Image (tube, rainbow, N blue to C red; front, side):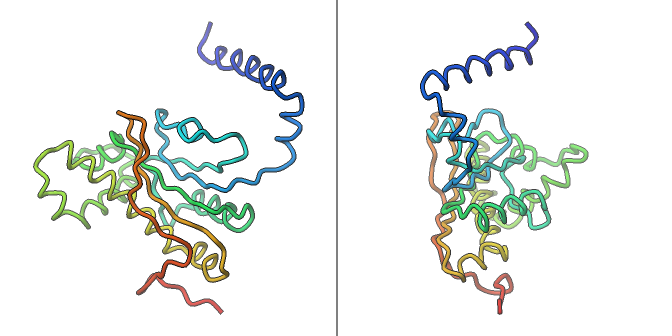
Length: 210
C-alpha cells in the first residue's frame, strides 16, 4: 500500500470509531469552534500540539512555521493571530519551541541554505542579540539548547510588540502569553517566559491608541 493511501484508510477507521463513541461527534464539531488556546509552534513533525497537550478538536487553534517564529512582516502568522484574538477570543497564546530544532541548528551555522536563509535570519538576530551569553557556553549542545530557549523568549516578546496584542490588553481582554520549550527527548513542556494580560510594553514598541 502506498503511504498516502495508508493515511486515507486510517482516516476512515478513525471516523467510524468516533461515531461509535458518540454518534453526534461530527455534528457537534461542525457547529463552531471556541478554542481557549492559540499554539504557535514549529512545523517539525515530531511536535504534535494536540497530542502532547491532550487537547481535543476545537480546543486549540494552531499555527506552525519553521522554528516557531513571530515575524512582524509575516501576514500569515499575523492573520492567524488577529483572528484568534479578535474573533475567537482566545485566552492563552503559546509560543512553543523544541530542543533539537533543525531551524535553530541551521541558523547557528554560516552555511548557505538558499531561500530559507531569509527566514533563518530572524534566529540569527536572536543569536546576535544574546551573543555574549551564548558564546560563553562552551558545550555546543548546551549552547544550542539555550538558543532554542532564547528564541522562544524573543518570539513571545515579539507578540507583545504587535498592535493586535496591545489593543486587546488595552480593552481589558484577557490574553495571556506563554513561551514553552518541548523536550523531544523526554516529552515534557518547559515554561520559559510568561506575560500575563496587561503586561506593560515600553519604549518605541508601545502603541498609543485613541
